[in-house]
Image (cartoon, rainbow, N blue to C red; front, side):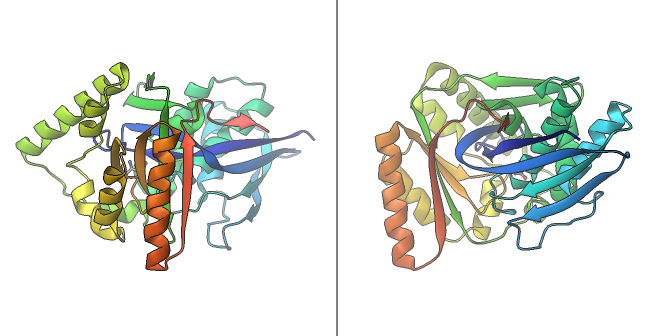
Length: 308
Ligand code: HSE
């Protein structure tokens, strides 16, 4: 029986005004999934390593296996697979942990089946998987995890996803505090409707972000990394949000916001030196607070999921 192991990177989604639409992949942490052929047609999650026993083991409840089942159904395949999932990306961290497992699962199975679908075509099945964790169909983590770079989702059905240009010296600094924020809960606290003025402001920010990325204009990127739809409601879930933003901007970051639905936050930086400056400032502050944290500092990962 053949097997394959793949690695799917952590991601920073929303990117401020790109709520539910935009995301990027980073280098420093990734989930690793091994998929082995079975002689029957079952999909079995044999083992999860690194989750402290907290993630669901049932095929119908885990993002990785739900995504695989969705793909097999689409392909009308009667193949079965054993799955071993090594979690390196903390779940409920805002770093696309559930998306990463789902992407890794469908990418690995597709490879064992002889690549009937392209990476882009696999995205809807990974989104199906991620739904069980986030209770929303949005591919803003799934798309960059699969494709790498910065992605923009125009539509999932029909599938229309673009990879965006970005300034080549972009560095992303991510701070993860050991606080859990469930995406489903962080979505539930958002308003059901927004004022017209908020929608217009958000549109202005998204247009600025897209233009800024295309033209390497830091001022436009900074404005575009702001958000009126989610950040004002979610920042209360994130310890030290305001201080972390102040420290990032004081140390020359281009922009700052929540990563995914939090609690991780990210700073967008122009070059490695600037990124290290922000990293140092955040480390100094967090160490003074005496709270546990992790910092990832990375250029944008342009590759996405890959076979190990
Ligand atoms: N865009 C989602 C949200 C999280 O902010 O709720 C990442 O998919």
